[in-house]
Image 1 (cartoon, rainbow, N blue to C red):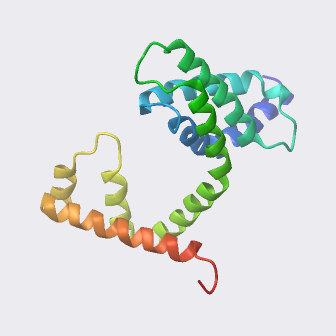
Image 2: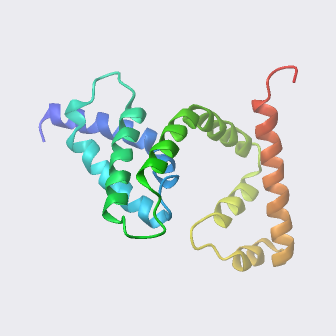
Image 3: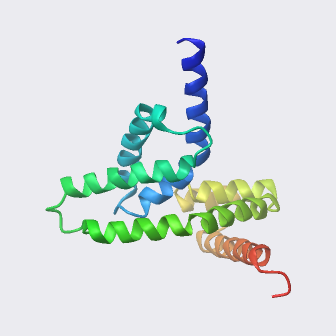
Length: 176
């Protein structure tokens, strides 16, 4: 790989990894399952890389990527059009437009949540992360934390409530 290709590849990777959570959330909001979203996101990443030469320096990568993701989702829907559990493409278009409109606020919420999470002691933050890992077994996590399953669920509830309150406080307008 020559120096120019390497630079372009690094630029793409920086942009993609920065915006991948938002692109994933966008796709996930439009399809019925996480597995479908993962498959579509892989296809989106390929197209983004193949078309990266068309992306203007300084442009809005997230908006560009979500546009490509929208077309990939519509193609996925077309291919599965006979499945009764798949939304009509017109409905997906409306949801996609609303998702893009809400993205700045959702990004702000994610950033505030990260700040709130930093105030949680490391051991508790680790338990929270383990509880939300795919395939997590709450019984096992509760046991290692020294809590009963019911006690662990109560603790999770309190942690979620504390984080929600923190996010709401930080997002509330001054004087509200």
